[in-house]
Image (cartoon, each protein chain N blue to C red):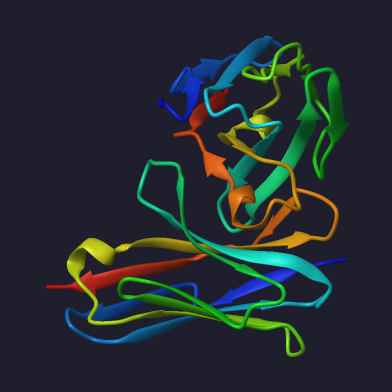
Length: 112
Length: 116
């Protein structure tokens, strides 16, 4: 059974710091991996999607990497800002299906 | 495009009551799904649909029913509400798997349900 883990559960950093969020999964047979952002009381917003054949994806200050063989993905946020404060979730998709399996998220607080 | 919309935003029920959570999308997505989010447990899949007239169970389907009569709508029915169903419910939609980056999933704003 696929399990997705995110460590740490919570992270607090000063503004301007570069940071890395971690996501690990137990079954490397994934179709793709998606990173989401969730603001308090809101829905999920997709940040980056990495196909199983890709190693990384970039969008602005965000860079996500994928290492299927080790079952790991990282989300790198450069020059963090208070507006980046949110919960970040990763989710893996198994092959031949749209079903997502989510991690429990990392709550990020960027202090001004 | 409104994207994925959900109603109501908040709901309080008494044990044993029934209700329907509404979900609609205007992106012509074939795939739609319902998740519940509980503290410390992440999002878990309740039911999903790969197109009008086709539904299937997810990870935690007990106590919930779905139907898909149109591409746009995917309502979730609670048959007899229980306190264990207190949660935040999210609806999501996407193109079918295999469409590359276009199969990104889009989520609605959620319905916060409390069962007393």
